[in-house]
Image (cartoon, rainbow, N blue to C red; front, side, top):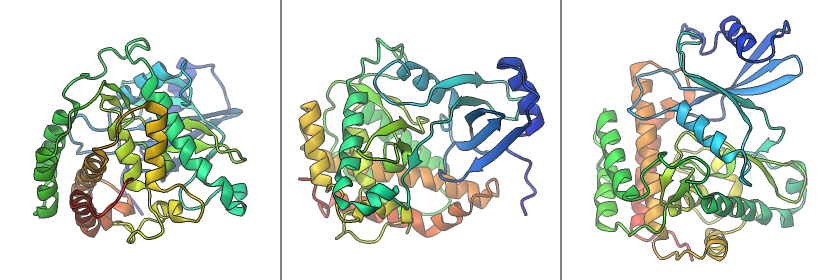
Length: 349
């Protein structure tokens, strides 16, 4: 049993919410959601109210990581647009309330697809292609938002995004090092040598994948909310496409680097191929796709570095997430996959 203090203290949160929202005597129920490994997520119920709370994990944390205020800000900006996001309710930056900053948003009644498809999509193989196309169409909608018009004019720098990504994540790798990382270092060199020129900047989600979307349970495929915006910024939109493709398995692919069942679902019959997703994005946006391997390698490299930081937290004993214990072998496996993309082992056309 963990001896760590609770991440959310119910009585303290209840008192705070009574001062910020309509007061209620109904008991507060808190359920920790284990689906992700970044910011901590909780279902919060009070009578008829159903919310989701997001807060950073326990430290030590890398600089600029797990910034819930940025996540809240981008949700506020996108709420009036045609991009589906949960409705944000409040941001609390007072760490005396639960021990960390947090924000609250409305809970969206839908399905997150990780290891199992909704029943209708399980029964009808022909419906599954729509899931990938819906992901691409909503991504195209996001990348079409005028980020200055929605109040994100100083949310990120519109130029030099890829250069900053390489610099920032190389620094995070150095800050997280507990062991040699030769394959990650080789990918770092390749990325610097193959850096493309970015097109016009857009809002970038930064963690865009199948299980960061809330789908309606009934067909046709429809996204009710895009989740987990902690990595969002202004930058190169193809970074989001590369990230989505980095998780998109096809039947002939090798086993996932981390043996996570959530990365197997798109290999089921009926799902779009990576090439079909690339073609749909090109059709919706008019962007050229010649540098897709760079963006996919960048995505896997960043994920490996992020998880290396999580592995460092595991070694330091500051997390009780059992997933992190698997990163001793999982991160090197991801690095090998990224290196394979650099060498042309995956096709995207």
